[in-house]
Amino acid sequence: MNNDPVRSCGAHHHHDHDDNLATILYFVGLAAFLIALFLPSGTFKSVFYLSALVLSGYHIIIEGFVDTVQQTIQRKKFMPNVHILMTLAAIGAVIIGEYMEATLLILIFAGAHFLEHYAEDKSNKEITNLLNLNPTTARRIKANGETEVVDVSQLQIGDQLSILNGDQIPTDGIVMSGNSSVDQSAITGESIPIEKQDGDLLYGSTINGTGTLVMEVTKDSSDTVIAKIIKLVSQTQSNISKTAAFIKRIEPIYVTTVIILTPIFYLLGLYAFQWTAYDSFYRTMVFLIATSPCALAATDIPATLSSISNLAKHGVLFKGGSYLSNLSDLTAVAFDKTGTLTTGKPVVTETYFGDDVTEVAQKEFEQVIVSMESKSNHPLAQAIIQHYDNITQHEMEVENVIGVGLVATTGGLTYKIGKPSSYAVIPIDIQKQTEIFEHEGKTVVYFGSEEKVLALIAIQDVPKDSSKKAIEYFKNEKIHTVMITGDAKRTGEAIGRQLGIDEVRGNVMPEEKATIISELKETHPVIAMLGDGVNDAPALVTADIGVAMGEGTDIAIDVADAVLMKNDLTRFSYTHRVAKKLRKIVWQNIFIALSVVVMLVILNMIGQMNMTFAVIFHEGSTIAVILNGLRLLKGVEN
Image (cartoon, rainbow, N blue to C red; front, side, top):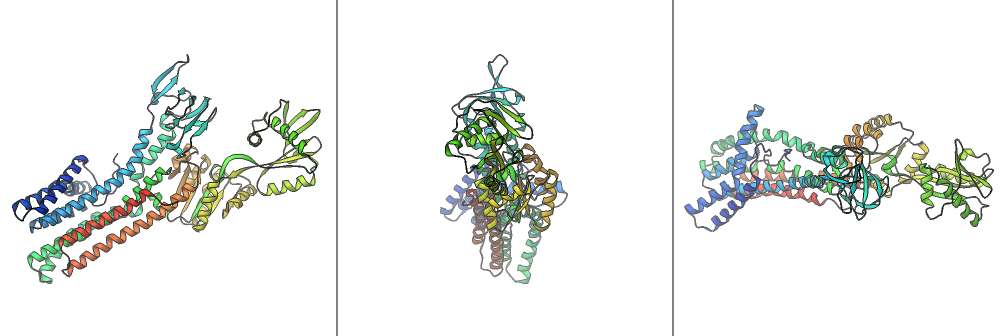
């Protein structure tokens, strides 16, 4: 795929030369150059040098002239690229008989060109890997129970598919029957397979384990998570950072200026500095090499592509380099609560039985609680059953009384489970515990007889451990943290206290989230928003960097600038560290590139620089900045 990002050293491919042929000829030319080094002076030596120059640099020369002509015609103004500067410098060196220097210039220049291709190819590899993951066939179950192998594109929502052990799951859907563990690492980055059973979500491209499953298709193949990921990652190279965009914009102007200054420099040397014609031409060629913006053009793109490639391996996908670059300037980050900061599933955090309840009675009451809750499909009931997963349920008649809760009679006694408001008389010790738990933002459920409250159960959607680590990181970085939630303010503040969040906005309606982000931008110039729901989409768009949680809704993923494939906020803090390192490396590269140009020009003016060293220093700086950028393929230490 060719989204034509800026490349250093003239960077646009408007014709598709054969990369393999160019590589082969480069190494043939390199061999010719090495042979020439050991030949005695004479015609053969010169022929080998010139052969090496043409073989190694033919694609550079073609891009120099052909791209310049094509771009000039297309834009209706002179649009030279860096390749033409290098070609002119090499031709100039040949004219004055400096064959070795001319060939060395092209060899190192082309070598840097190939090295930059490597950075782009590493980034493209992530896309290719994703494309290879995309399933092509599925086992569809026909009405008579038989299975047929069909192309994934033929699947329709509602189709039932058979998933055998080791199969690649063809598309997104839900488990209808069966149990198995599924390797979701390709989608979420989780290294441990996830157990799947009835009702659980399945992602296309994940790998089934040893069990067998029957699944129902819930999405068209073009709307699956993997399809969205491929589309998202494919956008990365067409969106470049402000630095890269600025360099791309000024490159033709810079090259034109150098071309204009070149003859002026020659005439100044000849008439103002009284250099000989040969010396003036020689120094002009050194000037042409020294002022070429090869290294400057390579300061950003290889580093950005390396960062994006590394983040993709960590399950963080960006739509482009500009969003990653902006992240290094982050001043505030806003989080949705449910599913982003918290697990999104209520769990029992504490239970409390009244002072006068014996240990034996407590065990009996726990069995009654589990037996009653097993008749309810309420999320809180599921949390209670999960908490008491080692208690055997008893069969009993349970009635759901509106305004009261669950009511059941067993052993001649009537019990009920409900809100605190469903009880008229509450013991003092129960009241005190209720106040403590409610202050902590927990939902309190009472269990008791018809007359008396016997116990309470505190339930909460608890913060994830990864959220605590991420918030701690942002506090250390002096980045303002905000929680935006539709929950009651007290519930939000309780979670905020547990996590150490700076600011909590509670009772927020979905349409108000984007307004809050706009308000925050007035005091915090660069703000990120993380969310996973449909109601987060407007806020994700309003923020400078919108980050969707990969297990969230499709619309959140569609509008976001980046996606965390696993709902783990430590991956976002890792991303911020990568963005900061990217910014640091880009500035290092700019300093290296400009310093070498200034040094070479000054040394050339005072006669202390020959062409060989000019080539080595200048092209060496290009390789240095590319290699410096490639360090980001390894990411940063956690």
